[in-house]
Image (cartoon, rainbow over all chains, first blue to last red; front, side, top):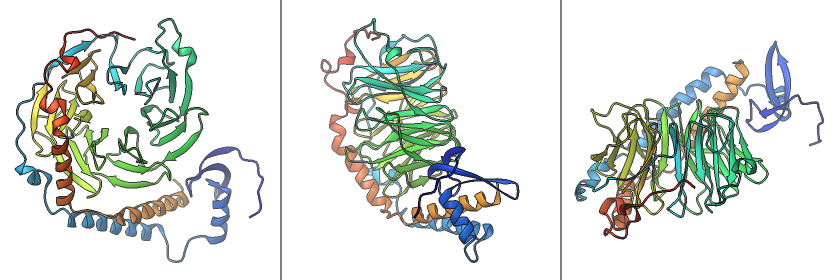
Length: 381
Length: 68
């Protein structure tokens, strides 16, 4: 195939093949078409395949959706809580607030534990580490513990190397890595300090090389803001899950950018997604007041954690070390602790004076940290 | 939205659904049994579940935290 050179005014995802490349801006009957050059050629030569039309494709997608539901239901031979009936009921948990951290002057939006289990980073609605924006919604610790990444309304995610020197100006060393076209809602390092995965209000997730700032892979499929993402726990794993305002939770292959599985059973925005410690399942928290548990190998929702008295949206979830407990933070200022297997609530943790924005269990499972709009963080153990 | 990009996105949706429909699935009974087994195997190490002997949990001692 010979090389083509042409003047490209725009660069972006092609409307036909979705690959990021220089786009040919052409007009067909006054409507703008933004295709890459390869797709323009395809369109000119092939046109519609025989018999294909919008209506027929629509019919095909409806029948595929039905087939998908049928296949999933066929394997739904028993409920998770029935299988767990023989498991001993949990005794009362002795979890209380052990620390209240009052370093912030404004709502605490996010926090993350360092792998050394004793340090954490938190982000807030103020100029903490001098980001040029007010809401820092995403923050994450690098696996080595030597850097943190944070991002928010500035549409970017920046990496700050850490130092123990209190006089050091961290803002000066800041490296802007990710660039989205809307706010950054979540970020996480992959297994090394070298790659950063971000989710954004622009509906996409993206994988970046920290050193060069280059976009390595982008993930398209959500039809609304992506609010949360979580990396699969295995060392060799190359998948992550994301949840968003389109009520869908999608599982992605990091190398190909492919959406491998998709789950849509929530009735409102999904605020948070978190993998089960074994990596075979994940939980989600939603504005509809429920948390749900999805098994990846059965490819379906296997549990719903809800109560009539719980009407406020859930903003964040995390599992305990064994995966038996699910901690969920809600907009009614409480944290509910659910028995993952039996589906019942085992405890409710009170103490915060405003909505919970984030709950995270420490890497060794000894403590839970909750961040809240009451400007504090609480450590529970 | 132009009719051509509608077509393109419908085609993509159909391809995506075909991919999802072809995923290999496990019975819920088996998946649930494995989830349960993971929980029970690791329950002993789960400090928030069973608690640790007081003295070994650093958060239970009254100490203060510092902003780094």
